[in-house]
Image (cartoon, rainbow, N blue to C red; front, side, top):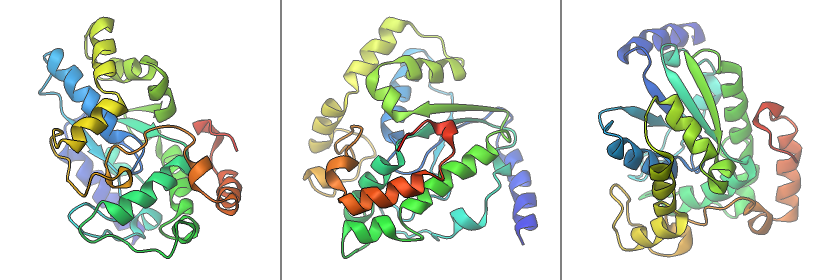
Length: 252
């Protein structure tokens, strides 16, 4: 029945106006941080009415209210025709860092958290684990010509400077000074956001505790998998990374 799903997605594409912006990412890729900055930028630029639909596009297995999603959706429905009339910003992050952070998300930040015997069990799981991240990336590579426009942004680049952030702003056709962008960027560092989260000063953030691994803004750095995953887990991930399309630029 995949053909029916494809037709349904094409019809759904007309639910949104032509040129609708989407921010798409796998969970724990930095989407919350990027949206936090964009909201401040749009407000300062007088573009608060510009709507950006941010979505995990069937890759999220559990949400904070405890609802669990069908984990097979991402594997069963591989065409993205619902984005046919849209403009997509795809936010990528090193899949090994994603799966490391995602483990803490699904086991700590939900009213009905998953329970795994170990982080290794989660990473190696055929449906919930690392293979899921690789599939999501490759699926979007295969579908990146479906939207009207497609922009790849990397979390690691956002951590370094405002270059990729400016690419997003240009993609959104927003006019704002470089000075304002830099100020908002500096006001939105992981440290500052983490401190605000601990004080419950971030709108829309659920409170599951103040321990680092229970925060939405956790470590927010690149390469954390090197110290959090076992040697065997890293070896497994690196083997799966061989299947990742080189378009994303992540090396083993």
